[in-house]
Amino acid sequence: MNGREHWGSRIGFILAAAGSAVGLGNVWKFPFITGMYGGAAFVLFYLISILFIGLPVMLIEFSIGRRTQLNPVGAFRTLAPKGPWFLVGVMGVTVGFIILSYYSVVAGWTLSYILKAVVGGFNGFSSPEVAGEAFAAYSSHPVWPILSHAVFMFLCVWFVSRGVKSGIERGNRILMPTLFLIILLLIIRGVTLEGSGEGLKFLFKPDFSKLTPNAMLVATGHAFFTLSLGMGAMLTYGSYLSKKEDLVRSALWIMVADTGVALLAGIAIFTAVFAMGFEPNAGPGLVFHVFPAIFAVMPGGVFFGILFFLLLSIAALTSGMSLLEVVTAYFIDQRGWSRHKASMVFGFLIFLLGVPSALSFGVLGKVHIFGMILFDFFDYLSFKYMLPLGGFLMVLFTIFRWKPQSLLEELRKGGPALKISTGLATLLLLISALFVGVTFVAGILGKA
Ligand code: TRP
Image (cartoon, rainbow, N blue to C red; front, side, top):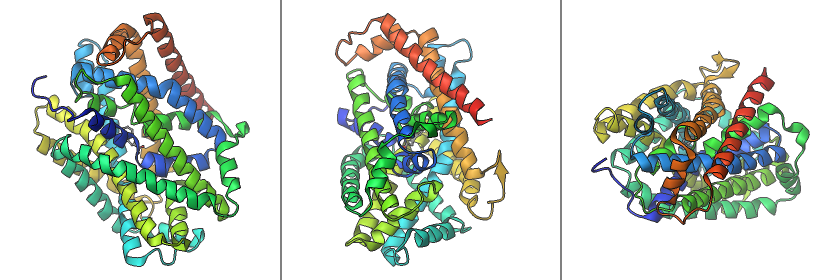
């Protein structure tokens, strides 16, 4: 495709892709699902998923994107003009739409917490119980969560409508290292709290009896979620790449950064959870119960609190942009819309879809689908079912339609001459397909 925008630099691409991967999934979601699904055994299964399916799927997405220089739908259409494979892309664009709708609600919470810290300095957050009540009061409010959700969507649109290059690349370069630094400070605070050892045990000493098939599927789904895989976000980012990039090395960097931030956030939060005698299974509010309670009692807590929620918001923003970019790229490439129009129209529609999720902690709290409030329904539907399914289909596509040979060819451009035979590559891909397939079926049957 002529005239397609490309990343300004190699590091710019890596940071943007890492910015997509590192987000609320690492600092908000990973701790709360680890708390709900049993701790260390869950973490171990998540790490195995990252390695066996995260890496191959990321390489597949980058390769397909760079090869076709198109959005997910256009990419599959180009590589497989006949047949239904383009539906994988259609599903991806749809999932991006759904994920961003509730993701933005949580990002809105983090924005509001910056304001809370600035105005009230976490006064009245001194214990996790009190902080928990404050969070419940905030998230069930009929107006504030919607306003902050709107602000977050506005910011996503603002960046995406200006194109991929300048805003995203520059922002990440400064903000990602700072986020890392803050988490490090929080860890030091966490592990020096009395009774923090219990938290480390919870996170690192596996109890395999807790690893149900359902927990395994959640872990696998989260591996996709946290790496932004399974719906074409990395494919879209890959479509702005030139042939000079070493895809394997980039993918490894992104995975290390993402997993590192998740584990560090996990340490910071669980040491504090256990030291303060709080329950680890509080669900989506966990980070909002525990961190404000730490900030309320630590020296300089207001300062760190503001910084923490600010950086969390920014991490969310760099991820939110990548989700909106998938939908936007589809309407630009396939439907000929302008970038401005596509990002604004869909930013607004995604905002609308997010409103019921935002209200599901309050006035819509009684509305249940499959026994879940709307927020949980959208979350579980997308990350637990649709992302693993999308990833599974991408691997099958590569094995049976695109062919492992073509994947290797694309990976070798701009990278070292990968000494992997086609046979071995096929075997590895079959293993990942089997891994996701079995986890998926077991998880669904196990739940019933
Ligand atoms: N990976 C991001 C996080 O952990 C969320 C995200 C961004 C995402 N783009 C995605 C999740 C694409 C799934 C698919 O917060």
